[in-house]
Figure 1 (cartoon, rainbow, N blue to C red):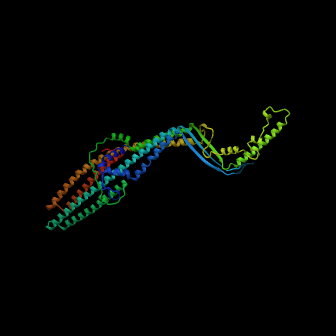
Figure 2: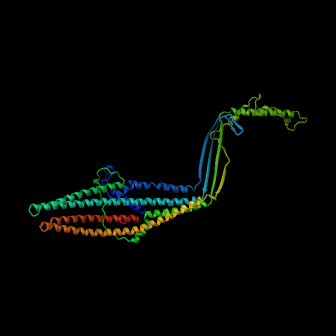
Figure 3: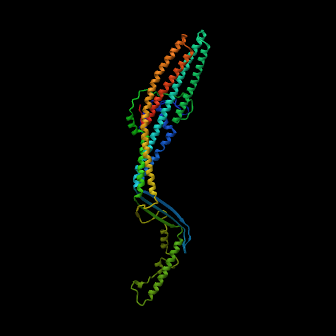
Length: 510
């Protein structure tokens, strides 16, 4: 995590003053290291793939907290039933009119268990592991870009060495031809100088090829399309060669707290331990509560059958009324009810008109008025609530299997964490050794370069006065070229070793 924050701070501080013109295909004309890191963070396909893991991890945490809240559900429906008959067993149910219906249901439920209580903490541990994986990928991307940036600078420095060798061989060839023209040399010396010049030209051609290839690889790692004239790319960053003063113990302590891979392994170990607790919680009871509201309404599409049914019922009631009146009228002693219990107008009493063949208009209207309310005049069902407790007793050893698997995963995570600690401790020691060795090698190469230059100067002087040979000059020139190349190699080996140590520690060291 520290690498990401430090890199972003450096980039934000340096970028406003380092804006560069873009060439064809998105390739910049000038490129500093800070700009290369910024471009890579926005364009590297592998880094973008890892960044995509952040949202699902955050969503998992939200879902874990959401599982502690009640769940709400609602539903509604509309229905149509055509008129007709339906047989059920030996019963026949008839419906004289088609009906339309609607209903709704709103329910709420809440359940709690120990596994649900652990889920947010486990989700946060997984999220922290994902964040550290992203930080580790960012650190790897930083090292990847820095190392290739150094490789491109090394290739450019080797081109300069090759150009200097071409110039020296050209001077040597000119000198050999001059010696031959005045009779102090021979054609063998001239041919030897020509061969040396041709070899240096060939080496320059190959050095320029390696320079272009290194720049192409740098642009590819950044994630930009490789188009346009890549040879016009100018790398503006310069690295100073400073004597290292690292302490292994201090760097190891720093790496244990900042290395993102180690932090990710620690988060995975924490999540695995919580996974064991979650698996064991399956032996504990879980509790639930639920409630809901519902309603229903139904309406006939044609009230005719209802009116006919009501008419039949009213006529039956009127006949029964007349029958009872006849009985009461034949009693020997009057019934104590008013009027002897006799109903004067049985048709009116049953809701029929005077003829007894039709319902009263107001009765029919009541039937029509009652057949309304679809689709939203619901008849609400009684409210209900229920509580539940669940305690699994035996599930065929499935819980034991899951606990065993969770324990194995925890053991694997613990050993992975221990592996990372050992790897980082050893990596810091090896990194400090590599940086120190590279620094010493650079100092030796610098001194050797001065000696080779002095050797070449002496050989040239001896050749000019006729006491030396062309072979001595050629050997001295090759020694200078080799010492210059070795010096360039040692310088960038040092910077690469520092970058590797920074990757292991997890934070910048210069």
